[in-house]
Image (cartoon, rainbow, N blue to C red; front, side, top):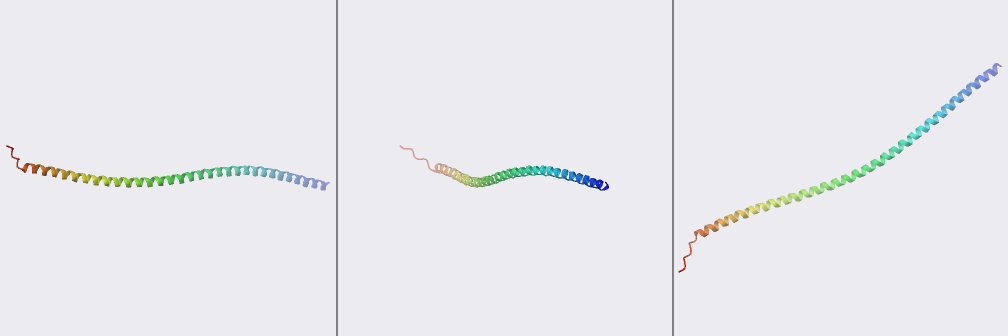
Length: 123
């Protein structure tokens, strides 16, 4: 009987240990399943974020090239404007010279006309 009681105690301990192991295995499986779902969600989120980042990078590259083209066009426009300004200044200087020459010629013409003797009246 003592042996039987000892066997029952051992059997009871083995059953308790088996139940505890079964509970641990089930809880580990549930935790692993939750972790797998969380990992899948995280991977989906990362892929979505990477796709958005790739789209943003391509837009950024496009905008950078447009900015560069606009800057080049602005530089060309500034150069053309500077050339037009120089041309305008040269024409203005030329106009001033011609105006002074015209005034001098008018002055000389008036002096020549007043210095000439008056023509004699016809008889």
